[in-house]
Image (tube, rainbow, N blue to C red; front, side, top):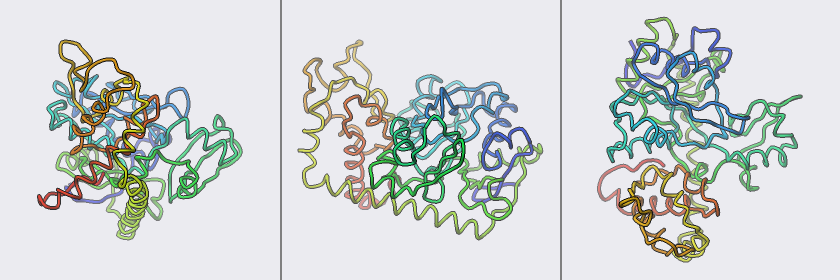
Amino acid sequence: MAAKGDMIYAWTTDSGVAKKAECGGAVTTLLKYALENKIVDVVVAVKKGFDLYDAVPVAITDAKDLDQTAGSLHCGTLLMSTFIQKYLDGAKNMKVGVVVKGCDLMSLIELGKRNEINMANVLTIGVNCGGSVNPIQGRKMIREKFGVDPDKVTKEEIDKGQFIIEYEGGHKGIKIDELEDEGYGRRTNCRRCKYKIPRQADLACGNWGVIGEKAGKATFVEICSDKGADLISKAVSAKKLETSAADPKGIEIRGKTEGAMLKLGEKWRKKEFTALRDNLWDFINKETSRCIKCYSCIEKCPVCISTPFEGRPESYMVRPGYIPSDPMFHLRRFASISDSCVNCGQCEELCPVEIPLALISHAIRVEGDNAYVPKLGAAPYKN
């Protein structure tokens, strides 16, 4: 029987899933099993849309449709928590299974604190995340740095410190460090992130640490809750999944991979936060002066919960009109999320005038954590 704290290799017994999925197909198989056996009523995941750079969130109730969500899409910059909040009524009347990266999970937890999501009804399968790439910038990077037509690319992945593409005629990888030093690579919030293995999920899954004959054919699974252990045990008993103990050397390699990603995150924090520290308020004033008050930074934020009063948008922090917005529009928003920004990057990703909102709010959050959390004896998120 599986137990909380176990570290295992897992792989599907379904040849069809194994062919479509990555790393042995364990995640897809677990979601299928949960849906088929009414452990969850719906699965929330991501599928490829128009092309490799178009990620579409889907709510699936028929297990056979889960095959279309197999594999990874690093150009998928969605936030799954707000999808559950807005379109599935916060899982208040249904059980939801969802695949989450670190920021998805942190935002689920924050929405749970605000009674916007019923976490008791949510089964979370976490996936290791080295970061995501803005789809427009991703296409530009592939064309300019890789010298490849982005429409010819059939697969992309981030592995062993490289961004790797497969395309008609070959494959190519370039070091993430090299790409990012030249302004390409992952989204800026992902560069700063220090939550690479989502251990607050029920299961934390990925390919880091799978070695030997299982490399590429199995998923490394860290069982993080009793709920996760029960799902693994039931799937194995039903012969839908096979498992073995993780190789001790693989566990060590996984730890080193995570450590390398955390160091990279610290590098970017030092570089970006230090530059802000001396003139933060001048920087905020300058950057937000081009705000057109579209409210996207509020509507897409998982922790800035604000309800219009009698349908009037001015209750979103400030009075209407006045473009550019009053300085207090952004200052109040930053203040309202200063203790809970999860660095998901949605505010910055969706800002039509490209204000570096995630950088500012993340800097304020981390500065606050550094100043107050140690004194309170609590551990902040590694966001």
